[in-house]
Length: 121
Image (cartoon, rainbow, N blue to C red; front, side, top):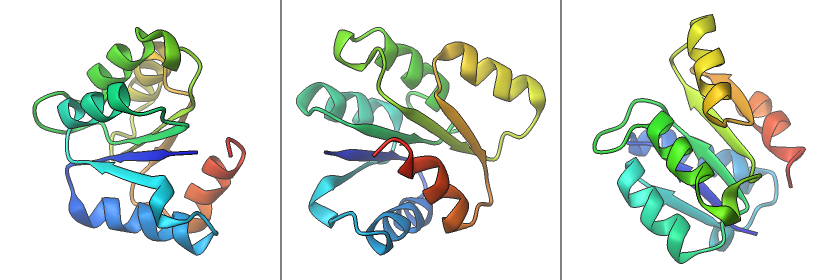
């Protein structure tokens, strides 16, 4: 099992990582990427089990990352949770239409994020 946290904010990556480790996920099963381009590289080189993806990032944004990920055979059905500040209903619809499995709006509590994640582990 490998979980990839994709967010350009180091603080957000740390918050997500802390949520995972506090719930028993060992650090060696958690990877990080600061943008969609870096995340794609990690996805190609590894077998990722679960993705936590921010929407607004440099180089390749979260939505474009999800589309590229879904075009890869090994990630057609992988769980992707969009964790973003984009809260409008049309954003949620756009993300789900692009292949996101679930959607969480920032700021979030660790318990809410864990509830979303735990069903996929």
